[in-house]
Length: 249
Image 1: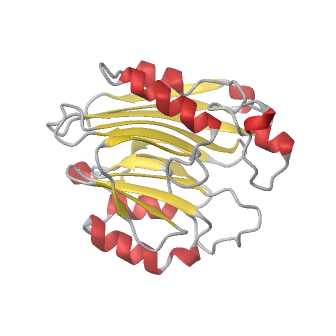
Image 2: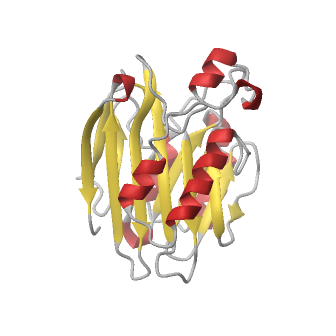
């Protein structure tokens, strides 16, 4: 997952609104959003290469998602980052216990940003920080740096999310995730991957022959615990492959 914008509003009629794009090589085998047969109450896509996932929901209001940290000089992790989402969704640990455990073994993974939450709390943990952060009410964004690092696509998507919050609907969330416009060269971050790659990765929705946005996901959580989850999947050059709409899970 390479871009997540979200509104956390405890006490609101819709306490959590999420719009997220997963960017990955098209050749990496993946299953779309579905119920996990071996884990009742878990709904997520599945990375068939490593077995984890990038975003999903679980029992008792559980939610988790992650992005990678873009740094070509960082060591490769021994374990898949997608495990971090899958383990929280399928496990029963309280948030604080789970993040304490993850913090103790974060070196096993490549750089990551992890969001985990339930009906009462939403927390952020970076592989580059030792302590999790319990988030206050607000609108946030994550790309491939720290929380709210002001990359152009994060700022654009976060502002677009703000405009949907009066009456949020999945179609509006998916629309903001479909923006293909690249940032001006002068505004590109410098993460060590070269100007051409920085430009490709600077759009909210990424499309190319080999790498791009594989899934766009919209999540709306109601105060009574009902959740609507919609995922659109894409192939090379951004061609849409399908859509899954779970209206009440």
